[in-house]
Length: 162
Image 1 (tube, rainbow, N blue to C red):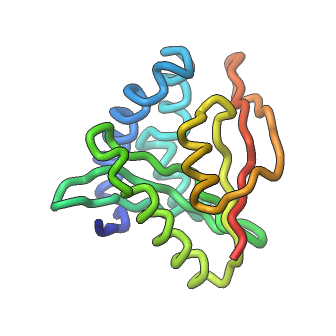
Image 2 (cartoon, helix red, strand yellow):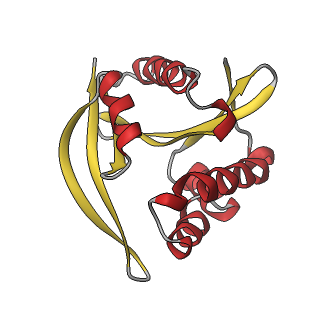
C-alpha cells in the first residue's frame, strides 16, 4: 500500500471516487436522499476544494498495486488530528488496507506535533466501529448533529491517544 496526497487538480477524481464509494457503502444505513445530500455537501468537488483551500484539510489516495483503492481526509484541529473520512472501494475491503492507512495517519499526526486522533463514526456502522476499537480507538462521546434538510448524523466520537 502507498499513499498519494491529492492535488487540487485531482479533486474531481477524488469527488468521483467518494460518490462511488458513498452510494455503494451507505445504502444499507442511510436513505438515498441523505446519501445524495451528504455527498453534495461534504464530498463534492466544491466541498472538497473549500475543505482544502479554506479549512486546512488534506486528502490522500490509498493505492494498492497501482490502483486507487480508497481515500482519507484529515485536518489538524486544536490539540488533535481530525480523521474526517477513511473509505475503501468494496473490492479492497478486508485486506488490511484500512489498518495500514491508519498507521500512516498516526505518523502524519505525530509529525504534525499532535498526540491524538479523533473521528466520528455512525452509531450503526458496527463493522467499522469494531475495526476502530481493534486499532486502539476508544469511544469518548456520542453526538447527534443537524446537517440540514431534516438530516442528522448520529455518531460516536472516537479517539486514539499516543
